[in-house]
Amino acid sequence: MMHPSDKKLNILYITPKKELIGGGAAQAVQLVKELSNKGHKAILVTQISSSCEQTAKEKGIRLRMFPLRHRFDVQSMLLLYRLMKQEKIDIVHVHNDSTHALAYFPAIWANVPAFVINRGVSLPVNYLNRFGFYWKKVGAIITVAEELRQMVLKNVKIPPQKVVTIHGGTDLERFDWKISGETVRKEFDIPLDYTVIGIIANLLPWKGHRYFFAAAKPLLIKYSKTAILLVGDDSSEYAKQLRKEVAPLGNKVVFTGYRTDIPQIMAALDMNVICSYDWEGLSGSLREALAMKKAVISTRVGGNAEVVEHGVNGFLVPPKDVEALRNAIERLIVNPDLRRKMGEEGRKLIESKFSLAERINKIEALYYQLVHQYATQKQY
Image 1: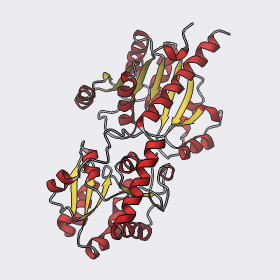
Image 2: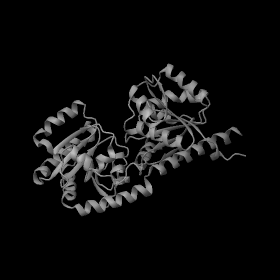
Image 3: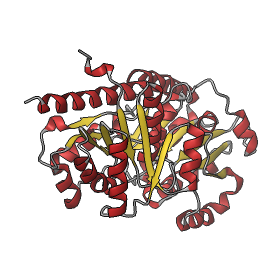
Image 4: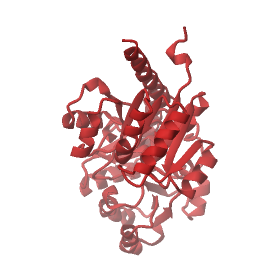
């Protein structure tokens, strides 16, 4: 008799995105690629988009594109149902609240063994989504941090074993601490003896850039050999306004725009800062910076305190607390030995608990558990 884990799985991931950048969309791409490499048949469904098509080609993953207009899009439901039947899907894994509703009924019609929901934001579960979490077909809810798991259990009265924390994983080969940051520093005319402070996050209000600049401006004046790299999509009106506000600081503040060479960017930094005040699940750039042996500073939001150990691999500060943020940044500016020590501790932590391989193995094991449960229930 075949052991359940000997069977390769057919897995369908769904995200209603037109770009596969950051957050749940990037996690879905990562899962499709890694599980395909392990021999499973993994397919990603997105909205119709040339950007998604290009990313899929670059990553070498299977992609299907449907309208996915809203959570009650009947055309997309029928397309999903046909795909689930044709591909004999074992697992449906959704990465967004709207796709939760959109894919659930097709999964029932197609008799898919297991339905998995990803939860990656630190927001209370609203009424509509809470109702969906009670649906019988939902086998597991994966949260990216224990903080989020507790939030779900507080909002939704479901068996605790149904909500599973599986932290985000970092590709330790891609985020290799030995990568040089000299090329990026030369690109932006930043001298090698400067202390570079980085924020890697799309320029959106809740990411807290304004609080960061309130903290950092006096330090840029006090310490002449310092510079700031702001990495992320800067096309929003908020970003345009932020540019005007920091213009007096001149070339000490660099807006890089969206970048794909994040390991090289990280290598050019001396510290990485997360100053969000809302929404965060567990920031991927924190894990990536620690993997690159960079000290980090983070606001205590979402699950970030699960990867940042205060005083060991970085500093935790309250959201919107300008003084605490300034003090933490200054401590790292003046103490390169502390930065190096924190970076070493950070890499150890990522290797032991937050690697990509660890995440993939845990999710694969969960899938097999759910499929086995379904097969066992059918026997009785």
